[in-house]
Image (cartoon, rainbow, N blue to C red; front, side):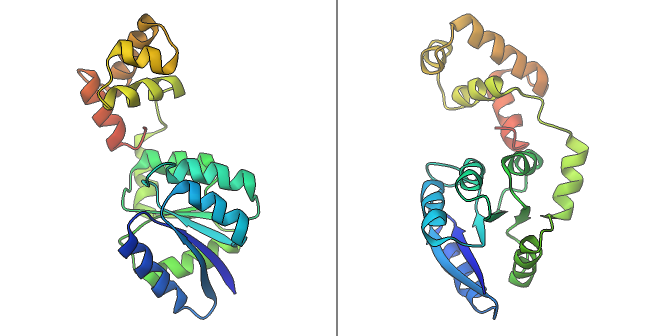
Length: 201
C-alpha cells in the first residue's frame, strides 16, 4: 500500500483529492494538512511514502516545505500538485528536491499514475510546463534580489525593506534597480508582477 500525505490549503479540494485517491486499490491517504509546517510535522509522524504538496499555502509554502521535508525524511518522495503552472515554480520546486510537478487540472487517474511513477524512482513533470520552463530559461534574480523584490511587492518602502532585511537603503535600491533591469520592467511594481507571473518569487 502506498502511503500518501496530502497538503492542500483548500479544505474542499483536499477532501475531494483524498476521497478519490483512497478509491485506488494501492493508495492510502494517511494524513491531510492545510499548510507547509503541518506537512513537515505529519511526514515525520506518519512516515508516508510520498507527499503531495500544494505550492501556495498559508505559512510555509510548498517549495520551502519540500526542502524541509526532504531534510527531515529523505526517503519520502515529493510531488508538487498546483493550480499555478508557472515555469519558475517548476525550477524552484525541483531545486528544492521535488520528484514531480503536476498542474491540478488533470484527471485523478493521471495523479494516481504519477504517484506510482514517482515512487518507482521516475521524475514526473507536466509536459506543457516543462516546455515553458525550457523556453523561459532560469530565474535571473539572485536570492537577495528576490527577497528585496518580494518585500517591495508587499508595499514596503526602501527604508522599511532595509530595516526588515538588515541592509542599507542604498543596497536595497541597488537590488531593486537590478531586479527591475533583469525583469525588463519599468518599475518595481511591474518587476514584482513579472517575477510573480514567472514563478521567480
